[in-house]
Length: 165
Image (cartoon, rainbow, N blue to C red; front, side, top):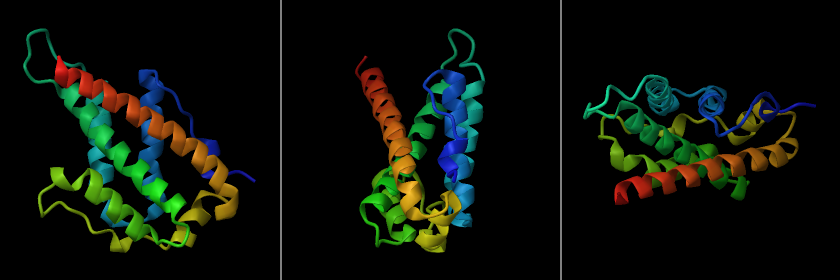
């Protein structure tokens, strides 16, 4: 039996990275909640920025760099929410995603934009969309999540390096 993760490709090259990121964004469709629309739209917008040129030499605006930073923040939010969900099997998604939002994105959003994750689907319904059962999804989700966390950590180090130069 296949799971959601069987449909995704991962990679670190630009085209593969964008493709993998689009897979993360599509994961929010499975949650079926408008609460994630802000994060999803933000991430989609940042993916579009990545495929544009950084600008002409001498331009001060760094659209792709900024888009990648915001995309990184969205990926970090997703990774932290799913990690918390896996580590707390009795916790509903609304708690996992709210906790991750508080740790990652809240400081960048105004009060008007801050989503409320009480509209998350029930945990059992979400995992049923990922595969036949939560148990059958656990191993591929852990593998996928570890790859996502590795990408986030690598990108965070890159941005730390950029801020020091």
